Image: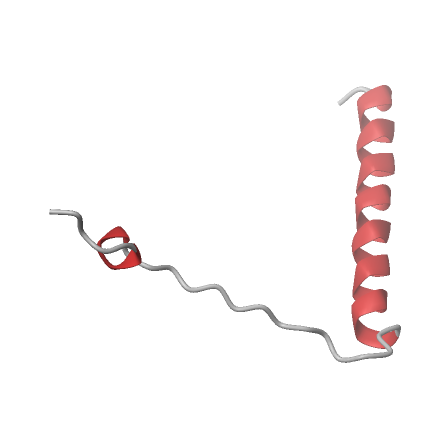
Length: 53
């Protein structure tokens, strides 16, 4: 591999890793209130709306 590609790859990997580490730290330690959980339910189209026929 060329040196320029290797440098770009390492810098990108460090950047993405630091973003993930920061988000994990925020979720684990910096939360002053409990996380809200939203639930989504998938409804079949036959049950979603009444039939017109």
